Length: 355
Image (cartoon, one colour):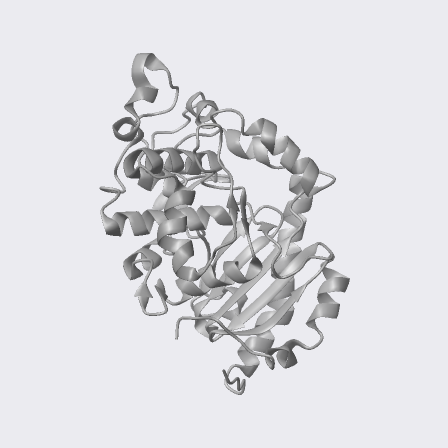
């Protein structure tokens, strides 16, 4: 089975969860639990409705990763080793850029560009009174060609040797992708990913020159987030179609090798990040094989737990400060660990659901 089935009986498993969420996680806008392909819990808060598009910010990074896998498989991108200098030579004429032309798609997917200035996140995150106010702000920020601020960033390390989370890296991917394939990330997603999953309502914003925000500004419905998570849980298979190559799902959710971890500064194995997916080590959430997640500013989450065949989707208020964003994320993950996963794990054998 590779489709998500909605069952009216699923709520029995989590009959008290909505009141707990309202009490303990007031910033949560939606919460969905998919177990073995069935939606066993779904609810919406703060006047949000199921069909409302919700801003999921850096969850877009994991979608970008999936699109790279699809494009590689189709031959639309020649190799992960394609570099900025090869894809975008015009940016390096006459010493126009301070960053290295040797940054490859692979380096950017692993957050190993060596750039230590996140100019993109600085433009997109912050506290706003309303979504309307945020969109007015974005309209101003997106009037420029975003890669220009990245090209003038300091190159702190040679490409490939240092890991540092940086949304600027995904903007480099977006530019290389568009130049190489002839389509923006959002256009490619519409043709080769979203249409397959039945995702027909979304917003993925772009800058003044048409480059999709590879690492942010994606709006999806929570159920469509669940579809994307379930696609990865099923190794890229959806309704009999190998939408994302199985090998790519495995490669992009595998820990990286040794690198300089810039915070805290140490040479170590990067175990918490793959190709634009966050990874939970074995033993996390009480799971022998851990878990992995797409994670967005403010606590937007697609959490995938293969050991119990589960996908958990949550959206939160994202118009907050960095400190509040961090607090919301950790409170949410603690809540999932304490209240949601134990119930699923203890009842996975007795849970009886019928289509």
